[in-house]
Image (cartoon, rainbow, N blue to C red):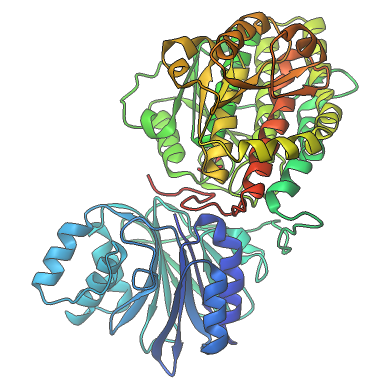
Length: 608
Ligand code: G6P
């Protein structure tokens, strides 16, 4: 992962590099660093931990220079300490890197054999030495970079600063994103356009394999084949503002509370409210009638959104849906039929495994439809059709509002598919649309359970393990609940299909393991309640999330029953996401954890 930034400017850059890095901290935050040229010499400052440590360092030891590069790291090779923090330097250059150089061991052995001395345990340092080595053999910086890149296996985005060359910054990408920003007498490099938003809204996205050669006023692009290339520049609308927390303590809390609004905005994009039908603006590339199968691929929370959608597509449109986590799908050589559709779901649109799955499916003749929150992302740009989620920037590492917006979009698309295939008549479509339209108001109702959840969180914070159970579309919600809790509170949690409990996890049940049961009063409610009885019979402490009917019918002693508003069970996952998120949030806050930037995680995972 990692975030990278570069500025070749006409005034001091270090403060601006730090500003850009703040916007890239979602990509990792275990160490940071910056290098600039001062009188032609490379100077750097690095620090372990989050960006504020680097800021403190820069206050003590400021860094001048009008050209520089910066990095925020998510460790892959080597511990997150200062020695392994980027930029990595030789006596000729400094480099920052996002991605993984898979053959670094072999390259390092070769370079050490040729006399190179390595300081860090990172894969990145081999890039610095390879370029240096090529320059020692007489190549100029551009030729040196062009020559060594084919030797690197794996994924990377790089920004490189050269000793004595205040007029040159080089960027390169393969597999990891990199954007070039055009300013007034200044040029920029960044992992994403949002990082560059305070400086410019004129962006050129690099293609796979491109090398960008920047001066203060020019951009030259060399493609993978070594030819000069033109790439369009475009004005983008990321908004120069940094998303603010407002009155909330954390971004995650703000994003949880924003959901009624962003879900309403998202559904308005897909629903013709007057007619009670769904729309899919930009969906011309998708012909639902011809599909033999849908394959869904995604990671993390986005994967669970896809898992819920499987139920919807199969039920409304009678299309078989296969779903797999992207990191498995991409390597298992899955046979894909002609006329297949792949739906990729991703908040960032940059997740490496999801992008690789997309490319595999595209190369195998699938139409690609991406449900993404960042419309300028790599996944969006490489898809045949885009179904945007309009959640706005999501800053908290644990996904919340992006998830419910993904569910909203997928629900609308499943209705579309059902209508197009003649599986839903107008009356049924109208009923589904009105169920969807009721969601934002019901979310507001669900939010009222927050004080109870806060009290419950104290209890949960004492647990070592927590189980989540659900059936049907509540099963993926159980998985998502467990993921949320472990991500931010570090309590071990597992989600299970309620019916699967007796095949193993029931062995874990005793008074010390809280069991959270997600059970709206739907057609599988009674089955879930039987499984809950099995937990109760073994002394398990139950927290039931249900509606008034479910609470009345459950007949089992619980330590808490969270009563959700009456909701058409078909859209229950979108509403039930809220208590699930709030349980994780309040438990983690009560335990004093860093909910917005939990340890070891990053928001956008651009390594395999
Ligand atoms: C990371 C994040 C998760 C997210 C997953 C997929 O693990 O911490 O919140 O669900 O990546 O990310 P994407 O951007 O593809 O939705």
